[in-house]
Length: 298
Image (cartoon, rainbow, N blue to C red; front, side):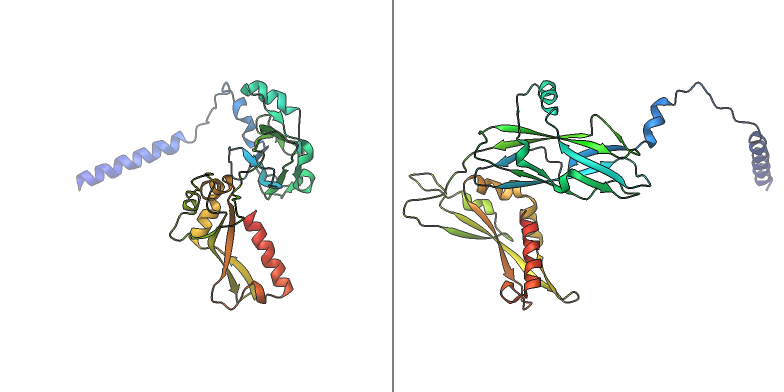
């Protein structure tokens, strides 16, 4: 008991001393340099691609367009609408080539289209725009070379500042010219359906003719997406199981190698036992489903 009383006494004395010390004024060292921290609350704008893919965008003469998703963001939200504008900026080419010791040519401005002419808004309290579509078109006038497409945030609301390192984006575009052809003597076409739940689509590209070396398969059908029906909204929708979705999301690994050999890759759409299919859709639902297909394929 004496020990417990002794401990209690010590705690009481300590608490009293702490309370006494807290009554004294606290002095701050005014010699500390706070300038490096003054910019932490400032909002800066940045421009980047959604998938952060550093690989060049590849074009072929027979491919009319490629779409790259862009995003404008700010480091700290503000309480007003942020007006932004993204534009093609040819003046960035020379500085890029000098910095990286490269000799890229400028990708033609007339083959580039930024959604909504590059003008977008960031909502109050938000930090990003919705994804912006950058459409890159091919042309027979392009040489078989790698080009540089320079973009920059050219305008921003006064509440946000531009950073010289983050306000620009450089996209490499590799033009491959004519795509390899699978055309064979006799005008026959070979179609291969690949059930992706248990098979790799790339297997279809391994079979070649002994004489010409061309792929035996001309068209690969990825089997399969489904047309499903939502009873609550009374509308059809495109359903992708985890395997078909994985293949589509990893296009560079499972689809592009086939396309680079001249093989056409298609997405099969199969009914799913719900009594709905492309043949029995009313016009309104057919257009909606077609738009959904287009979005997935793009």
